[in-house]
Amino acid sequence: MEPEIEKKENEAHLDHTLRPSRFDDYIGQETIKENLKILLRAAEERNHPAEHILFYGPPGLGKTTLAHLIAKETGRSLKATSGPAIEKVGDLASILTNLQPGDILFVDEIHRLNKTIEEVLYPAMESGVLDIIIGKGPSARTIQLDLPPFTLVAATTRIALLSAPLRSRFSGGTFRLEFYTEEEIAKIIRRSADILGVNADDSAIVEIAKRCRFTPRTANYFLKRCRDYAQVHKKDLDQKTVFLALALLGIDELGLSESDRQVLIVLIEKFNGGPVGLGTLAAATSEEDATIEEVIEPYLIRRGLLERTPRGRIATKKAYEHLGFDYPEKEE
Image (cartoon, rainbow, N blue to C red; front, side):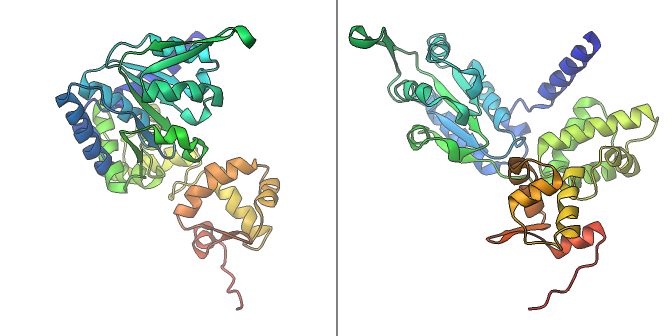
């Protein structure tokens, strides 16, 4: 058990080490970086904490990294928590009252905050006060605590689940993180390889970049697993080693996993390429509806392998060709 715990700690330390410590080291998201630089510089010149900021987008694109960079660039202390971790109003009150002036509070997955806690957060964000109700019934009374000035930086993968009143209070801006290009991913992998001391040639870096779903977190994960494979098998980290290592993980040349391919294979073999409804497809693949809709489908659609229509899901000609099936020329 102890070696396993140590392994997880080492992985967490590695992930932390790979995070950029300056905006200049952060690759990609150029528009967001420029906006943040102006926002932070203006707040510093006014000697005020920056206004509250919200980041949203798919997992692994750098929302948490940007929050840490904001703290480092401004020289402020960062206190991190998450929506599910704040279970009671008292939890939020404890966090807010322990902040120092100018601190940055980072709340990950803020869409999972309890609605009652959201109501308490509104005046804290807007007026810098905390309203607490003591007692119940006729004897209940409200006390108001002044909070130190702070900046709330929040992140979410599902912005649609945030209430409109909460979204409107992020006066510093709401920023959507975009997927990265293969060129940006290749730069990130090269930087990570240098930090890890991995001697990877250019062909290996390009091959990993092509398969990592346009996501830095996945790119770093693949790099570490390819490094492990090369180390154990005493090989150079080149394109061939990447092929072998990622094949062992079930990742093909388009970055599809076994689950991704299974959805397409079932769609083609059992339903003649579609259209087929989400529930039927989930039952046929033994996957949850939400897993297909939120995890598998977006990447397949982005790669042009799947179409979502009012009648159901349809496999494209590209999907047939990628999986080695003959594409049926459908009659009009």
